Length: 243
Image (tube, rainbow, N blue to C red; front, top):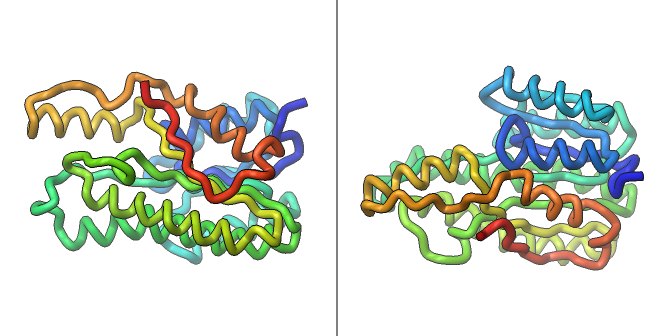
């Protein structure tokens, strides 16, 4: 029996990269899944087929996490189908490389909308369900740039830093309801790390990749925070995947 047997999980941004790897690992561990994407329907459908091939019940929906109505609709459909939500992984994100002086107001607002507001929307949407259950796990995605200096990602780092402090505060408020909320700061080979490497090569003359670690290598950390092994851990940040 898997460590997530019978648990209902929502994973946003699951069409590729870390989100896809997490969704597939959850399926292997016995979870049923609601997965989302926002731009590439075909990629999301491929992930849905992969989850189905692993024997896990699932739904796959296009949803913009920055739009509260779409997040609420996803949670409502999940509850209607399976009666509960045990795990939420707030993974959806974007990255547009730019030096701080070149970040437009539009880019700043969009980065905050997807990352910080998207995390806010996800947590607010599932918490009433989890409070009624008196149990739940929320895993928020942050990044190394929120914890140490970097180049070309000031808006992204600001949003990810906000997610850390949001996690700390909401985790504290949810302790009486047996809801654990934690952050993972993963580094893995994705389209985002491709963009970072390309920017650094152009701006700094170095082509070094931020990480050689595949997304599948970080997925077990998400299983840990989603299962009973982490019932007494909340309000923490785990840096994982650096090599």
